[in-house]
Image: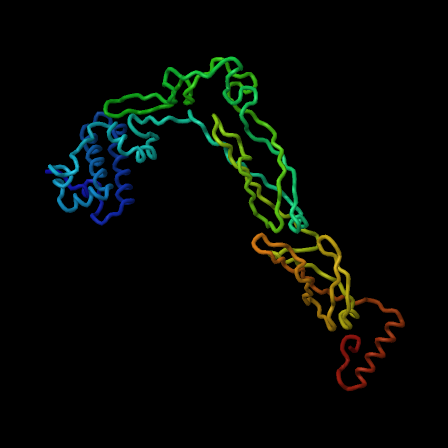
Amino acid sequence: MKRDFYEILGVTREADGDTIKKSYRRLAMQFHPDKNPGDKEAEEKFKECARAYEVLSDKDKRARYDRFGHQGVDGPGGMGGPHFQNASDIFEAFGDIFGDFFGQQGRGGGARRGTGPRRGADLRYLMEIDLVDVLDGVQKPISFQCEDNCKTCDGSGAEAGSKVETCAACGGRGQVVRAQGFFSMATTCPTCRGTGTIIKNPCKKCKGQGREVVERKLLVTVPAGVDNGTQLRMTGEGESGSKGAPAGDLYVELRVKPHPRFERDGTNLYGEVEISYLQAILGGDVEVETLKDKKTLSIPKGCQFGQELKLSGEGLPSLRSARAGDLIFIARVTIPKKLSKDEEKLLKQIAEHKTGSGKEKPGFFGL
């Protein structure tokens, strides 16, 4: 009597596709012929698990099996009986499963590796910029070393006048298949070391590698409004691809250096402005330095220590909107340690006047 497919895989009838796949992977590892050489019972269980997974991983087959049992998928009018006679059949049907777990794919475990075109690697570059560069944007040159196709042999690895030959040992596949009874195992070809090709007369400059280290120089355009961690992608400026494959990309990551006078909060800038106690009392205008020029900042009468004074729109631009941030100055009121005789005389007169009026008690300088 045939065993229930759910029982074979050790799952419930409500199991989803991922659960069924994980269970099959675990059992395939357990009963794999390579782990059980010469064990006929393990070989049969290996095929039994494969048949159960074939049915339960297919929506239509699973529905017929749930309704009619084995007759729905094996008997006349069903969807075909068992057809896994050897490992090659199983590898052919579930190459993705064995590709993940055994490094194989398809019949005989032989997908070609490392012999075709290969996209170039992506590269990263860390660039430091000044805060003033964030204001208007900037163009900066950079240089870095990376791998490129050898200019002498044009990436072939062969000396001029010679050619690259297909490896006779593996037929250009980069792998050789060794059969061990029921199981076939693919290993890297020892003759060509997995490349699938033989270079009898290698290029003297790159020693047959087809690649060389070069220094790349680029001009990077940094837009206004960037922030720490902003990445600029330069398509096709990474390492060159092999055998005609496209190049990788270059990712330039930005770091904004600290500024001696301003701190950044998004698009707003914060700085400090020193004002005298008289300016704090009487108000007035003072000249302040921004990131690139000078502006007039209005001090209101009665300005307090730590009060924020704003220059609207004089902060940093935004990458996402047309509105710029604000430049905000924190008032720092300076109190003189010494006064001239005339200053002290005048301040005492003011203090006596305010005290004599009876409106206020004397405070600092009687004010």
